[in-house]
Length: 269
Image (cartoon, helix red, strand yellow):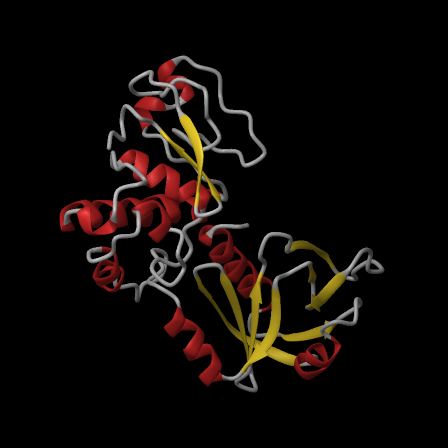
């Protein structure tokens, strides 16, 4: 599932492609035909992102809410667009470019009240200017649940996925199994600051890089990472390999149904 930086990049891309212009909308697959008809010919006025939720605002006060989930993906290209192939849930076309959406978990229209309610259900997003980490700390600081689970709870912190969870906890030397209430306020502040830094960099470069300059392949004289997710990381998908810092074997497990990666040396319980 795409993490929050990807959704913020998609919001910016839609704004660049369609912002301020009339958008043609259709649902070749047919599952969003009624919704597409309502926004067809409307002007895209603004875009928004909160966590893993993409929101496109039109000139009739309605918002298109998209959650990609595990299987959702976009393809883009110049107009005129080719004949749709595959199960295209929604095609948006502007003067010069088009966007095809396939396989989203959610594709629906919202009114302003429904959009406000969605924001209210989500935790603070490290990439949003209005994010208040205090809201997350109020839940984390009194919870018996592990910090590894809390960071993946979108009602606690929005936008963090498996990679950012694993890497931020490693960089701060925090055992993923530590209960939230056992964290100090200072440690939470450091975790939040790291998420802000790492995710903003993800928006900028379009991939997740989490290693510090002194741990890059060039600095350490090691081969670059080869993985479909790209980017240089400390522990994510490096189980069985030596930690870049202490040499301990990186471990993998399952926590609340999601894969977990950590270093037992750098993240001692």
